Length: 261
Ligand SMILES: O=P(O)(O)O[C@H]1O[C@H](CO)[C@@H](O)[C@H]1O
Ligand SMILES: O=c1cc[nH]c(=O)[nH]1
Image (cartoon, rainbow, N blue to C red; front, side, top):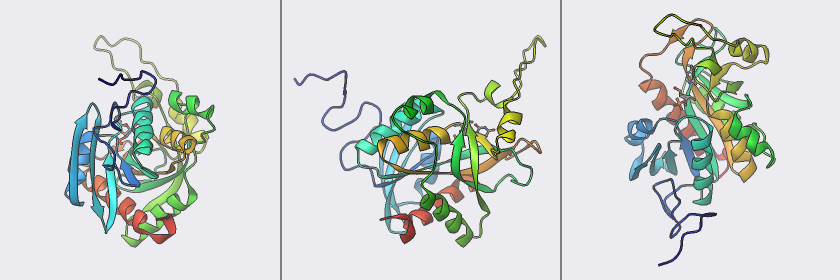
């Protein structure tokens, strides 16, 4: 039996993490964080092939407005997002748009609206690792413009903007740790600092998607739905409609001739 290489543990063209093989992945890919959103969005595609799920990675390929499209979840944060992007690229992905949720840092960016990320900050560990390979946390401008234009065509509010990505949902986003015994409240004013740097939102995968994607030659962008607003403390309890609109906007942008083949 052929020996598996530790340096490259793929077998018969199949990667160690994504539940897919040669020919399964479209050139255009959407990457939500949550694997359940892959199932949620499946009924919006035609001719769907469901490749199942391994760990946090659920993958389907189908077509949307006549174009072949893969949806692959990344899980939360940097390390699993890097694995998804590298394995997707090696299976044939060329263009990846992260679709997901964020909390806005500006009162006017109300829950249910959308941001097309043009740049991300945050110094997440995975992004810092990939800076050594030349990655930069910038979206391809045609993708950001395509997303804004597609949203306008659909009558939805989508603004371009810079977001901050964090490696931590609680401390790193100034969410209070509330110990049962009423002990110390820890906070480091990360949100104030992100606002001062000009970020309009906070989430956990955009900096990684743009930096890793750039370093390995993918065309990348990120489209985020405003699930919460830290300036007004609003929170969207039911974000199914927002998630479906993320696919409508990004799918329409992929169909646009201005955004590549
Ligand atoms: O809506 P998704 O894509 O899951 O993304 C956001 O939600 C998760 C935190 O609840 C993080 O992954 C964050 O980036
Ligand atoms: O507040 C939020 C909302 C979505 N995703 C995050 O990481 N933080």
